[in-house]
Length: 272
Image (cartoon, rainbow, N blue to C red; front, side, top):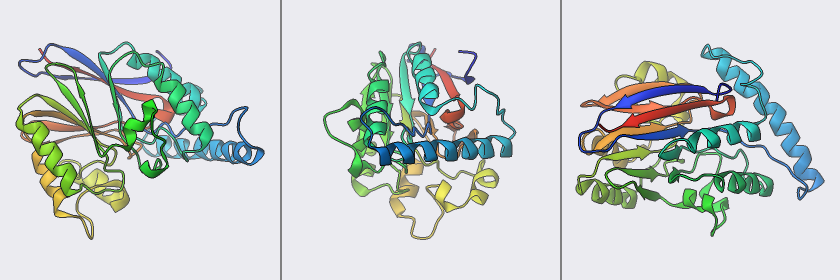
């Protein structure tokens, strides 16, 4: 796995048997295959080149490497990340697996997810648009406003905030899930603005945060309060394309992973 940039975190949690959770985000697949039309193929090739430039921009802006491993094809990066996930006890993918949700992107995503041998949660990113995702596939999980994976003494809860909105229904579902007291990892695409990350995130623009913007619904702030304390043990996010790990409140941290398209991934050891 020396082609990946792996960052490891220990999250001690009493009553949870030690588990490893693999977390990545923002792979931005721009796939084409033998079933693609000439127009789809041409667009995918153009988008692939565009993302070569975009990922390099983010990496250079935040002082990350841009060598051969980091600039590999997005499909290869996806397969590398999935292979690492299969060494863990569970996986969390916080959105933007696909760039445009083309038929080939869907086929590539589904084929990749089918290789996972561990329980996983995947949430929708702003590039995916839940209404475009098909039913009846592994990736259909991303269409759900709330998704849950039970690991026995730990639960993974995916929350679709790809449009930067928490609905009243989502808020009620999260409240109910947390009311049981089971230690919980919350996964979402767009990160929350916190006192600790304000300087780093606010200046990126409101597109990159789910709080403190014009028209922000009150449910967003209530959600932030909910996930800032037990039984939540961690909040996992993506979207920023740089690593941003900050305390939300009361010892609960938000772990923002950098772009998966350059092979960035987090491994969390959770439990005791």
